[in-house]
Image (cartoon, rainbow, N blue to C red; front, side, top):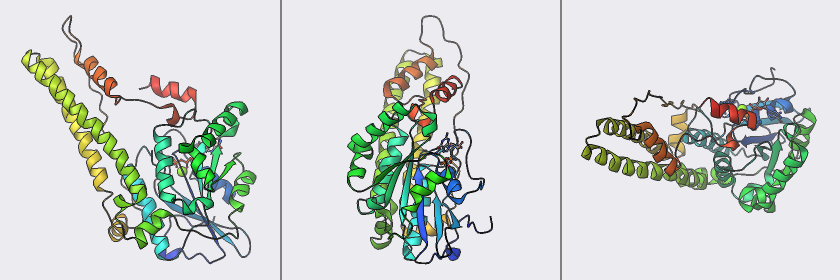
Length: 361
Ligand SMILES: Nc1nc2c(ncn2[C@@H]2O[C@H](COP(=O)(O)OP(=O)(O)OP(=O)(O)O)[C@@H](O)[C@H]2O)c(=O)[nH]1
Ligand SMILES: [Mg+2]
């Protein structure tokens, strides 16, 4: 494994003009690290198991492709990571991309992986794709490969139908494909991985929109196209939380008026919870307000902070007869607003896992 360069260090990263640099992106669990291991041809211990995001930083792996060409593969965390915030992920990717661009090192290709087992493209799958699209920009699209993984885990007909939907929907892969992105199927073995990768050997390099915006345009991350996209996701969450606070305040007022102390206490507890969530979202948005210098200084080359999870389940007291239990009322409110503890099919690998995850809460 001596010729594999892990944990990118800017000073060690000096690819020659003939070397090939390819970034691998996509949702958590889409198979990015697996793809990289397959290209390298050995298990380098970077593949995850289970639903938790595994790759926590931007790492670069090198392997000699021939006597004259080394290939550098850049592993990235997904935007839906369970441990990192989306801001952390964008900051880490922006830091890597901008630092290399500053040194005039560009990318030969970007491979975006997507699980064909995901029955629907929504929620975090769509968010990932939208941020990816903005991060690339139109110019880099001719250097992009959109590849589906996990074909052996679907019925071929289902896979083909989903692939057609990806291509036929402009907002999914349609527009990117029309603008030059190549579409491939990855069959989970080295031969397939190398077939996808080899297109970039001997090819030209390109810059992504994010690199140009941060380095040449001297924009803060929040003002880049990718930053704007992520910021708008944060705004949507913030709006929902604020609406939730409004409704909860009204419920609290009613409970106080009716001298329903139990309900009032529950509403107050819930308000605190929502306020904490709101503060967290606002902090994550603040994290995007960085320029290149601050970003590189703060991340000290891709340091990322774990996200604190704050999901306590509390025992619910029983309610007097004829009254709706506070917990049920809360669930109803959350349901109305669409912010309950929801598990999306697109976030798990298959239906069995979905059912398991649902039944364990
Ligand atoms: N059946 C099948 N399993 C795959 C394939 N690619 C990856 N996996 C499995 O899917 C799981 C996640 O793969 P990873 O390569 O860690 O995914 P990742 O995209 O790097 O995930 P993060 O690091 O969390 O962002 C692992 O258990 C892999 O063995 C594939 O093409 N087919
Ligand atoms: Mg990984």
